[in-house]
Length: 462
Image (cartoon, rainbow, N blue to C red; front, top):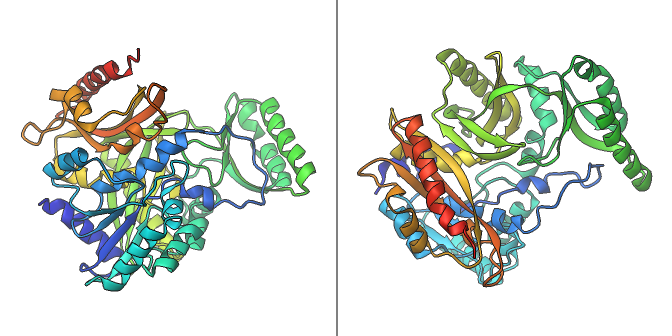
């Protein structure tokens, strides 16, 4: 058994409940942010992600690498036995798994559970018969997770949905930065069309000097709700679309942040763990791989200098203490950037919930000793049939991670590979999530290229 894995599970339990002898039921409800939005606000139109939602809903399988041996992971479908065997060979995947009788791909994990009476009965029985206290631990909490907790009798180990909604608003992050005197990108929070128009007048000088602005949906996630403003014409077009909605709906309420666009060297993400007594533990910082505002992965450890790391650590502790004062405890991740002048902007936004980095912590602690590097990423596959784990493993062959050589690709989610499958012969997109481990950044690049080449044979659909 992996002692490191058990140790982190125990640390999380102690932080959230004050006890080690509890069972956590992990509910990895990705994109819970959509349920924190106020439905009575104006929003710019956005593209529908369509069948990609089927894939996103299966990201909950990442919880296999987070849960401790005595814990339970709630899944949309039971995992591939071969995938679990591979995880167990590495010291993970020894928790229990509970899934609804039927998986509706269009529903997220919480909705799937609420619609399955048999699974709800099983969770109620668990709450009543467990020898040790049982707690529900979601990725993030909305009214849906509170309903699940209420109906099953399994208490939440995290704050209420009201607290989650409050602290995950980008406007909250800006107000907190001001309160704590943390370096902040010039910008404004806008709760009405009038405030947005006024805010643009304040920031228009950025465009006049050749810069850009960016308009962000305060509850947006994964690149959604971000509009780059290169000139005044683009801003006025956004205003026109919002004004048109306002005329139809009779409301002028919005929830946006308008900021100066900062040219950067890299994106950063760091995490903290806030316990119930207000203690804050810094969990580390990674370089985020971002394309068009959408998270693609992480490079670990970051290449920051000691001075730059010091800026991040100081901000992390101060933000954690402030979050606790505002009622939040648990895991929180902050997005930051290193700009082209070498300046750290420590808090672009707070993601007070689990982050992708959260699901990498155990792997990182177990298999990324000092001197080794990790590249967490997703690979896109174009498939026309279901792909078995054994077949994928055979294709990757020598490039798969093995503890004895300490390098290779460690797969930490297989469910997303086949999540969008509809019928034999119909092409669909799948995702493979994993962490490449290597002895140097250069070795990571070699291994990544080799994995891409091995997977390319799958993508050659005939």
